[in-house]
Image (cartoon, rainbow, N blue to C red; front, side, top):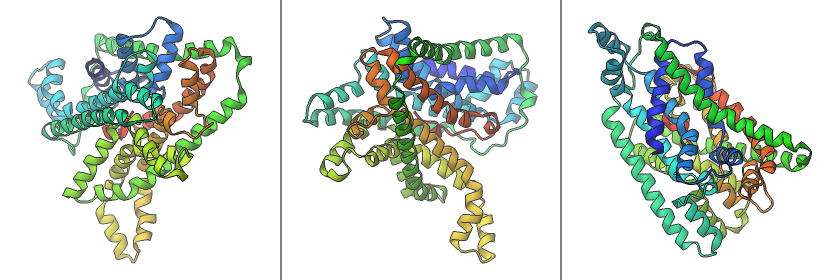
Length: 452
């Protein structure tokens, strides 16, 4: 149900932002993707605080819809920017309506990108722990977490984890096969967007209303609840605890992003070169790894750490779990960035007497660095919000903003959770804005780079 809702509304909003002539298009895009900064458990906490009876299956569908809609919007926009404009021009010359052009010309070209966004939504929904747990919905991730906490013998949790791994692998393999049949226009050069803008009030009103309602439910309501809860009792805020949790969150997320960057460098270099069986196998393995929920990675590292005692319950192991969870984001960014470096440029530099390190420093790095930095920023953003792996692997006494929010919200102490949620939202909003800012509009993230 979450997948169907996000696919329909996400494609509607993305298509409207791309084709409909609207004022403040960049601002509307930012409002449409800003919920990426808000974790599902913060969404849930704010809506429960607003409506105490808010729980159950439909409540979970609503929360996960709010959380994951930006994935489909961004993935669809990435596809729309690669649509062959000449085909639209031919269709218009034959008198096709806007809707006919979309279904007969545009949709076949963007199905692969929509599929990528839908895959992210499906994987996120299947792996979510915080929202469904707070809403009393029993899922595989909740069952695994409960078994892990209730028993020292974790074999049962491991068995259920294997089921989750198998389902994730099926999702990824199915999506890959679907895209191999539908995504045929990777390198098509598009013509000017201005030729195809639709200037009709009905279309403008529909797109604006959809974004306004979504922003109201996914941004304004959570911010209002957090501010009202915080301002109702600001004296009770433990500033020392808030500062420690904020610093811990930033540092461990930065460490995780750094480890992911180091691990992704050789992999990205391999994947950016000529395609081989080994490189394709490596890429599939990383994608399946990306599909694994935090609770599965956490359980695996708990088992590993218990046998290697000197890293068990250390900040490094927690940061390493973030790197494994979000490695695909860093690899996708690294691969795309290195692929943008013209091979001829490196050859010319070599003929001028530069050694490999000089070529890397003076030729490759200046071209690839912006994209690599963008991918690292995305890993940092998602690592800050990670909950289940943090709960399972954090050192004793180590608190992040996510764990503080969870500790308070899980026992209905909403006023205590408000300042931590506000700080997390503010910190996460900065990289979210960087990832969606208007001057990056011509270089959209791939669906692999968007992630949960």
